[in-house]
Length: 246
Image (cartoon, rainbow, N blue to C red; front, side, top):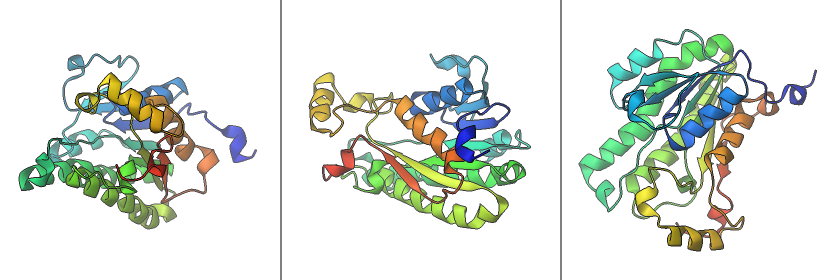
């Protein structure tokens, strides 16, 4: 049977989505669940603090900037088929130009993701699993007011390449997805309905993205359809990066 004939059936697969408590991450987690996977998600608070429905999922509280918290979660997984790191943060109003805030963002978006990947590498090797790390359109066009976010995401894009080379012989594939603008809680204070409408008018596809748009790309990259794809980053931006500087 050809790989494309097996397509998107994740029955019996174990999936961990960090940052799966909200926004894009939650959309990704729900997509895997709908396709038969056993799904675990993480959030920075207790599950009861979120409005999302975690029915049928395992929920773990995780502070990715704390190595002890990372160990406490990752040691729960003896074997793992898919790791999707949606965890991340951004600071606005020029805060990232300050050393303390710059370090905080990089610690979450890059160092913390590296910690998750290396901690779960043995579990992934047992299943010849896949990693997808969410980077961003800022890997192509820097966000002028977000030096830490931009630097951490381009660093993550290249980390994917290194891990793909390092772990490929173990059957582990590592790829990235770079979302464009997807309205979420993280971006809510930066976008009014009027601003979004004006933004949509400029986009080649005429609309902002949704968590389902990003989930589709993630599902492809960890499916048999992408069995020969590793070390790559797939932009899912509605054509945003065709327009010039962000």
